[in-house]
Structure formats: C-alpha cells, structure tokens
Image (cartoon, rainbow, N blue to C red; front, side):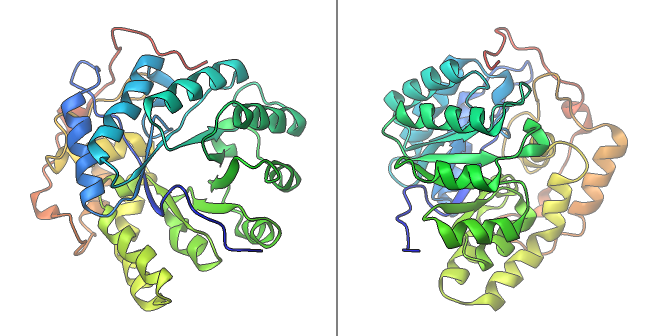
Length: 325
C-alpha cells in the first residue's frame, strides 16, 4: 500500500486529567502537564480517553480539556479527543462540540457494555465519521469494551475517507500486519509494552500511558525507528520496561500514573474519581518496587520520587456527575 499521510503525530500521550484533592479538574495542573509532555517530545495529545477518566468527566469538562490543551500546545502537538460514548447520538454530539473547540482529530472507542454486532460497530463508526470533517482513530480495546473490532470490520471501515487510523490494544500483531498490507490505515500501539514491536512491523507510533511520565524516551524510540536505528530504539524500549510494568501491571494505568506523577512532584494531587481508587498499601509497594528498578531515563529523575500513599488513598465524588453513558 502507499505511505499514508499522518495527521495525528507519532508520540501521542494518553493524557491523565489532574484533579484536586476533592476531585475537581485542576486546570492549572492540566496546563502544566500538557506543556511538560509536549516540551519533552510528544507531538500528539489524546485528552478525555480511558487514561483521562472519560467515564467520570462531564461533557463540558471534556470540551474544555480540548480547548485548554489546544491553547497550551500552541501548534506544537495535535490535540485528539477520545472517549466518546456507547450511544451513537451522544458520541456524535460530543465529537461535534470537540471539533468546534479546536480538536485536530477524534478517537472513537468501540461501543462498550451494550456489545453490538460487527454491523452495529461499523455503523457507529461510519455515522461518527460522517458527522465530522476531522480524521478518525478507531480504538480497538476488547478487554474494556467486551467486543473486538474484527479484521473484516476494520477493512470495511478503512474505506471511509475520514477513518485514518487504529489504536490497537488487542495486541494481535499478526492482524496488524494483515491490515497494514491491505489498507492505508495508520496503526498506533495501544499497549505501552507493544510500542516498539508495533513500530517494527510498520506501525506509525503509540498512544501511551507511560508517556505521561516519560515522553522523551518514546520520542527517542520513534525517531530511531524512523532512522532505521534498531539498536537505539531497543535501548529505549529496554530502559522503559520496568516503568511500563510499574504503570500498567498492578492497578489501572490511570491510578499508577497519577501516583507516580504526584511522587515526582509533577501534579498537585494523585486523586482519581470513583469508582477508581488509589493503590492499596500492597499495590503501592509493588509499584514502588518496580520504580526502584528503573535506571536512567531521559527527562525523569527518580531520585526525587517521593510517593504519598495517604494522599492517593480512596477516590473522589465530583460535584457534578459525569455524562458518559
């Protein structure tokens, strides 16, 4: 297939949404965090995705996150709005508002909980893509949605001119290869551990959780692959391995990422919104043990890591309930 244009970037951060201790969005921390990851190598930001706690954000919060990220990035990175809804009408409404707010692209997750057939999934994707002029990333994460986007459905979706990419959290690299051979879709690794393997078979980049903490080594990895320097890319991959394990293994990635960012002094509170809660003592100990194995990583000084288990304990009920169905 031809080499497709990429309207999204290559090192995309699945951005956490910083909260205050009482569970409200900390807009000052949002601004600082966006600026940090862009300054350290991210060329794309996905706001209001899984890692951004989309399920407990209100629609006005989601739209404002697009606006704030767009303003802070100031052309240095593309702003992608994620999350969506498992109700097609609601998803369309939200993506239209996000487009008006300045989003550069949208990421559409497979409808979750209601478990539609492949025909229903395809119709959902097509109707969302029809409703916007923005480029679309399909988000394939059956572990959370309950249903995969099957190979045949991806091929059919790829015929829509606005559907340009897939974030693959299914982890089937043989299927990724099949789709890359038969379409012009762009592929992003949706599991941090698979960033280099996905790039190695022709993927374009990653949409990473660990990149909230350390975007610079992912920039190094991607640039090395672009330059056909497998050795440098592999070194970055190996350096990141214990951090990826600390972030993605013991508790939900959002919880661990906020715990680590707070311990590094990068956000003011590690608070998450219920039903997510901070790590329990045993989970926090596992995260900290993994962090102790991290060697030198560009852009992060773990000698200053000061985790606060008490600050992270529990979860918050925000003043206004979220609007994701």
